[in-house]
Length: 167
Picture 1: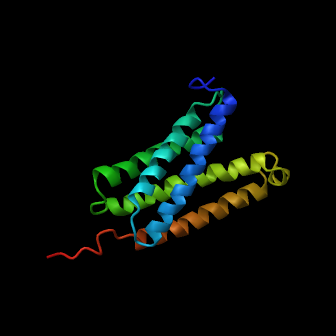
Picture 2: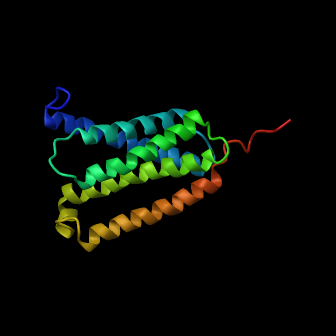
Picture 3: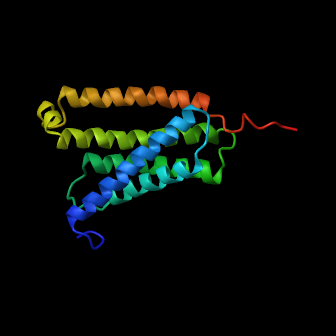
């Protein structure tokens, strides 16, 4: 039992939160690329991504797993994104720091999605039964390259104060 829930129910809750984090994260990424802001979606993305990480740490384990390592890396990145957005209000260099952190947090959600797909989807599991085979590694490298490109574009395009006229 975790938080009074069976392991199966807790897993379903964790997956639902994760999916909401992924969907809202892609909405936020699209907004960054379009030089727009979606405060509601951003809040949903950041909260669900924090909850995904927190609930991920609650699963019973006796060893350091790739999922735990991903959570340990993602946690400070999320803290930076939250600080840059809500405390520093994207002022100065905090704009690009926020974009990098937000895109990075979404990337780590996608890393977990790819890993889970290779664990749970029979056709993918057959291609990489241990997760160390080339198809799994290629999928992760492709994901990394896509996010590096999208992150660089988002940093260049997202200028939340460009539309303001200084008088």
